[in-house]
Length: 326
Length: 254
Ligand SMILES: Nc1ncnc2c1ncn2[C@@H]1O[C@H](COP(=O)(O)OP(=O)(O)OP(=O)(O)O)[C@@H](O)[C@H]1O
Ligand SMILES: [Mg+2]
Image: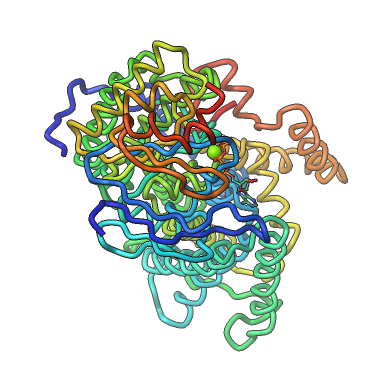
C-alpha cells in the first residue's frame, strides 16, 4: 500500500528549536546562584518532571487518576532502598526508580481499564497513594518508618553528587532528556492516539487503535517520569520521609498541572517552575505561603481555565502546541 | 455463505422493542450494498450490531467466513470492518489533518523507542503519513482545510473528513451511515462518485445507509430494504424500483 515517498521535508514543528535555549541558559545558573537558590532550582526540576508525568494522565489522557504521589514516593523510596540495601550506584538506582514507577503506573492503569472512571477512579488512586504512605511508615525494618531513610553518599559515574551544583547538572541532563522524549512521543502517533482516546474512546477503537494499550502506555510512561522525579527528590533531600508523599502533596501536584495548563507539556514546565519558585519566595512573609498558594490556584482556575500557557499562547504562536487547544 | 459479509437470522431486541427481527443478507466483495428504509427501520442498529457496538439477541454474523458476533468494536475493526457514525465522530480537539493521521495510525511504521528518541526513521514515517493524509484529503477536494480545526468546518465538510479518515484505515469493508446528509447537491454527487471509485478501484467493499433514493439507485450494486426491523426486499436497483411492497412501505409517498 505504501509506495509513496515523502514529497516535502516539512518539519513537523518549525518553532520548537528555540526551546533548547532554556536549558542552555539554565546551565549558567550555578555561576550566579548561592547554595540555597541552587537547591530551589534543583527542586524546580524535580517538580517539572512531577508535573510532566502527572499531566500525561490528567491532561492528555483525561483520566482523573491521582496516583501521582504513589509514583513519586515509590521512585524516591526505591532509590534509597536500592542504594542502601543493594549497593546500587545512583545512576542504577535511577533506572530502578523509573522501572518501579512504571510498574506502579501499570497497576494504576488496571483500574482505568476495568471501566472504573471519574470519581471512582479518583478515590481509588488517592487510596493507592495513602496505602503506599502507610507502607512507608509501617515497613520500618526497611524504610525506618517516620524517622526517614537516609541515602548513602550519592555518586554518579564515580563522581560525588553531594554539592548542589553537581546535582544541578545531573538533574538538568535528566530533565532535558525526559522532557524531550515526552515531547517526541506527544507529537507522534502516540500523542494523537492518547488525545483521541480522551476525546472519544469508541471512535478511536473503531479506527483499529488498541485503546487499552495506549491507556496502559500513558500510565506506565507517567509513572516512570514521576518515579524518576522521585529519585531526583531523594538525591536532593538525601533522606526520604513518608510525610513527603501525603494528600497535601497530591494537591500541590494537581495545582501545578492546572496552573500550567492541563494537556500541555510547556504548561507542565511552567506549572512546575511557578508553583515551586513562588511559594518559596512568599516564605519570607510568614503565613503567606498557603494563602498565596490557594489564591493563585483559584485565580487561574477562574480566569484562565486552560492555565498560564494559554495566556502565553495568546502572545506568541511559539506556545501553541500541536495537540493543545487554547 | 457466499458474500464478504453474511448475516443470518440476526435479531436485536432492546428491552421489548424489536429493532431488528430475523434479518439475513449478504454483502459481496467489491460492491456497494445500500441499506434503505424509513426512519427507525433499524438501519443504524444493523450497523451497530455488525460493528460490535450492540450484541445480537439472536443470529450469526460472518465476515470473510469468520463469525464476528459478540466481538468488541475494536476486535471487529481489527478484522477489517470499519464504520462512520451518523452523528459525527471526529476528534474535536484536532485539526483535519490530525484526524486523518489518527485514521492512518496503525499503518504508520514506527515503534515506541524510535518515537521516544525521535529517530530519523520514525520522523520519516510521520512525514510520509502526513503526505498521504493530504493526498487522501485531496480526493474529496478537502486538502485546503488540512490545518483547520474540525470545529470550524460545516457539518457536510466534517462528514467528508470523517469518511476520508475511515478510508485512510484501508478497510476491506466500510460501513457508511448516511454519508451524504447535509451536503450540497454537487458535494453529494461527488461523494457518491468517490464511494463508487472506492469500491471499483481501491477494492473496498461498502455497506451504505442513505435516504436520498436517487443517490442509492445510481450508486449502488444491490439494495436491501428494511422496514420496522424486518427485511422486506433485496435486489438490484432496477428490481427494487419495481417492487410493490417497497413502493408501498417506503417509496409509496413518491
Ligand atoms: N441503544 C438502543 N436502545 C434502545 N432502543 C434503541 C437503541 N438503538 C436504537 N433503538 C431503537 O431501535 C429502533 C431502530 O433505530 P435505528 O437507529 O436503527 O433506526 P434507523 O433506521 O437508523 O433510523 P434513521 O433513519 O432515523 O437513522 C428505533 O425505534 C430506536 O429508537
Ligand atoms: Mg440511523
